[in-house]
Image (cartoon, rainbow, N blue to C red; front, side, top):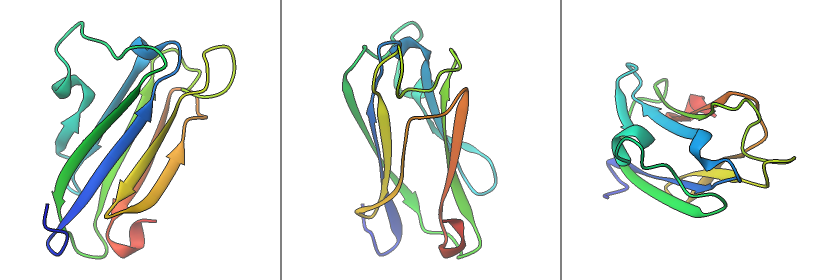
Length: 119
């Protein structure tokens, strides 16, 4: 991935003890679905509990006012961190820089990245 013309984007995910509830999507600035856990994994092939996963994506650079979005979802409504379902987490890394670290949310959390105005 040529970082001069693209964003080398990594999603690092450590699942909680209810990994079958976790999904994620990356959308373009025009809201087109680009990457998804549903695309990466066949129907019925869920993430395993308490395991690390890494997805690397190469996304074209955009204007400073345009943003990609990453949405992490948990169908159980208890996020992926902290509590009875374990200590899952995720990191969004763009060109080697951590843009977001999370896991404590209810049903979903969305982060914007890309152009300079997205953080």
